[in-house]
Length: 295
Image 1 (spheres, rainbow, N blue to C red):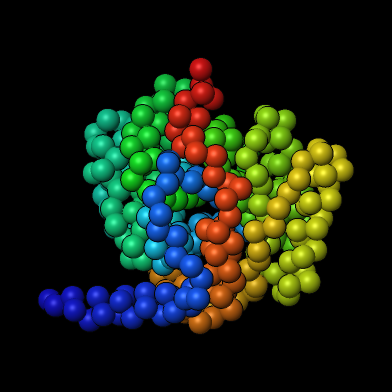
Image 2 (cartoon, rainbow, N blue to C red):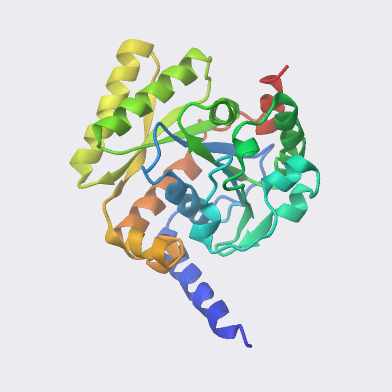
């Protein structure tokens, strides 16, 4: 069976995406170590994985070498949004059956994708030795990418905290719901108490308007400043858009399936802000810092 038609479809969608981000300078200069963005949230159901997947594609459209790692240990599902089929994942790396190169694969949108494991209890409760083993494999990514996006789990589990503390930037996804705001602050508090040094940027998701998004960011910024003395930056916002749900059902990232929808415009703006920022680059690379968390 010929695959010419699907390939043309993906090519057309990628072209429309690049048109969406055109006018912004592409970042192609080599870096001393990859910039690490840990996408986190205080609670589940806030669209964190959708943000991570579509952010990776938008940053790749700007000319960056992007690696997306599904680091939601035990509850991974980024592969569904990417319609990526791979028989191997990070659990096979932990068990020693496969190497990272054998697990990772290029997916649509010019992103190198490392799938996580879903429904594997031991991945959600890694021992220190198993984390070190995984880190030894993940370290290979540091020199082959400009940006590494970690789709972390929600909450304050040891796995989530380890990756967030080791990243160059924490992208905290929150919604206007009071439970989301409360749990987001709880995550910020734990990270700050663990001596977080990376910037935290808040992305307001599922906002009905720019005003509501600004309110989400203002609330988290105010409480973090008042009670934790920790500055919080704004990464941007994502408006409510039914194209997102439609794209999920079609197992296609919304920036490719609906590149001219409001959500895609918002995501392109977020990617432009993060790609243009230099505050998140400390130059040390992720996994040398991760190792220090366990010694």
